[in-house]
Length: 471
Image 1 (tube, helix red, strand yellow):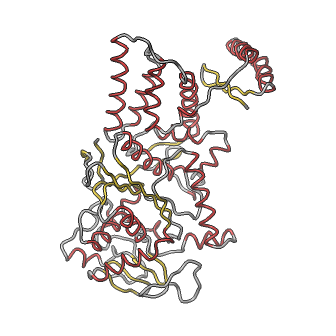
Image 2 (cartoon, rainbow, N blue to C red; image 1 turned 90 degrees about the vertical axis):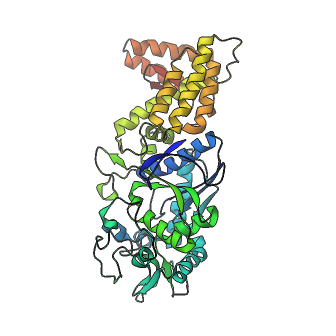
Image 3 (cartoon, rainbow, N blue to C red; image 1 turned 135 degrees about the vertical axis):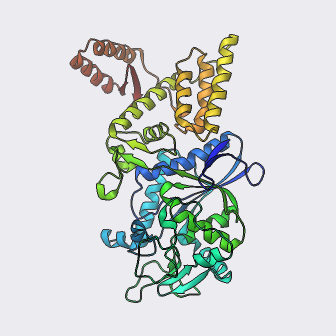
């Protein structure tokens, strides 16, 4: 398998640190609001990597964090150590406690996670349950001489880290990672690149989320949680770290610095995988723009969550993907059609004989699909192979076996589709309706649709196909 490594900026042959075992960590959501479909593309990427590795017979140990404490709003302005706590802000806005806020949005995230048929990690690690580990991480960094105390907290000392022969910011390609290039703030840091390991609680107000530490009452800096939790479950060195491309600028470089400073080992992570942004109507997605759509927004418009997953499969993970409702409609039609066709193969008896030509086709389809997913997750190419196979003349039994095998990677629940038992009477009405639609007799066709529904079924028109489902 080959994968693009953001750390080396090239496609590399994937070789786990320990034999056939793979440790993977994905940066999950900060649960102060609903997750956008842009964020879901990142979590889908984590799921895709896990599915492909399992498909290739690797043993996968998968961890995803849930940040159930607030990031500061200053990260939007270039300094994550400043601004207002997002969870505290949501608490004031919604009139709920901070703990109620994170519980509500965590539950919503987990429900949506299931709707998208994403594989559950070994553990969803919640930041508030790892305060002890985060404090221990900071203590290790302190003992190595890579931290200092400022007026508002304990900070990582970037210059001291570099003076000890370490490189900082290799992962990032942004100018803001360079000395003195970040947004100026009122905080007196020794270097503009330094970042908070522990923040002191304000003296003039009581925070809802704060903990005691050797440095005083406060809360961990944004970056501490991911290092502490990933190393707790995957070790001081592991194979793959996944996140959105926005985290390449500071969050992931800071993770690397603090983790390697604490452990004294290199590298912290061998392969870094980053997914590109999801655009909306050709532009940026953002809450302030009103286009940070949620999964619930799509469901309200009648879209199956798995149609969104099908849409993600249409683009390569390292390239921006442009979301429009027209594009989602097209993806939805494609997904319904694929689901309808594959349902017809279920239960088809095995072949008694097959020509050499068709047998060779079956083997070629299997090999080509595997080759596509192994080549830096080329899912658009893999989906093209899926449809080529669907339209081919190989036996339906072989088609069913191939799609059953491939759905381990696609995660579209194609093998869970139940064939609907339809009476001869309903089948006759369906066929009559098809003929009326061909003749463009829409009113008469609609009357038959209503009659079909009264008999307990509903019909969906997908291109030239008609899907019949129980109501």
